[in-house]
Each structure stands twice: as C-alpha cells, then as structure tokens.
Length: 201
Image (cartoon, rainbow, N blue to C red):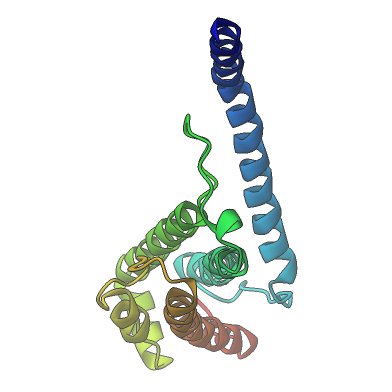
C-alpha cells in the first residue's frame, strides 16, 4: 500500500513539474495558430486595386489609405469568429484550459479581435472628425458621412461578445462587421472616383 502511495505521489510530482513546459508549448501553439489566422485573413481579403491619391489633399490621401487598411483589418474578427464556430462543433477544442495562462479558449481570441477592430474603427472616426474644414467640405460635397459607421459602433454591445453561443454570436458579429465595411467601401469608392476625376487640393 505504501509503495502505491509513493508511486502516486511521484507521478503527481512529475505531472506538476511538466505543467509549465507543456503549458508553454500549448501557448506557443496558440500564438502560432493566431498568426496563421491573421495571415490567412490578409491572404483571403480581396486584393485592393492600385489607386493613386495624388490629387487628394494630404489629409484626405491619408484617410483614403487608412480606410483601405481598416477595411482589410476587419477581416480579423471575421476569421476569429469563424474559427470559434468551427471549434465549437467539438467541445474539447472549443474550451480547453491547461492552466498557467496557457488558455486555448477561442472566446479569448474572438474578444481580442473585437477589441482591436473597435479600436481601429474609433481611430478612423477620430481621423475623419479631425480633418481640416476644407476637407470636411469636400466630404460633404462627395455625399460622404460617418453616420453609418458611427451608428454601427454605437449599437448596443457593438464589437463585444455577448454570449458563449458561437452560432448566435457569429451571425451578429458578421452582420456588424459587414455593415461597417459597407460604410468604409462608400468612403473608399467616393474618394477613388474623386481622385480619377482630378479633385485637386
């Protein structure tokens, strides 16, 4: 009996000592999966046609570039929520925690992607609000407004996960992101047409 007890204690000690290295390996694997997901999101994003912004004012040219970058960056929360939905079909993949901070929970990945997206949209809105008066007038002349993007961001629980149900959250997040991207598309398209039409400083 004593031998069995000693053996169990020994096995327990080995298990505890392996928690840190195993946890580190799992965390490294999670970070690698995140990087792969982000690279895949960039690869799957539609290729942006080359458009010159030489005829826009410096502030509008920067806004044009940032609009294109943000539209592409919004692919990250879509990829995260799709990965969560795929993992949710298998409960073991959906919620695995080996301790020591090595958390494979897909919910955390979705939350981080949503926080990044929300910050990016707020920064973009701040850039539009900070445009010089002449550029603001140009946007008005082009019929551009941040109303749709700001309205989406001000919705209740916008860019926040509200439940642990992948299917329900996936549909809500995809609808929100697509709504914001539609507003960004309008900005990009109008500024692009203005560029081709020769809208000078």
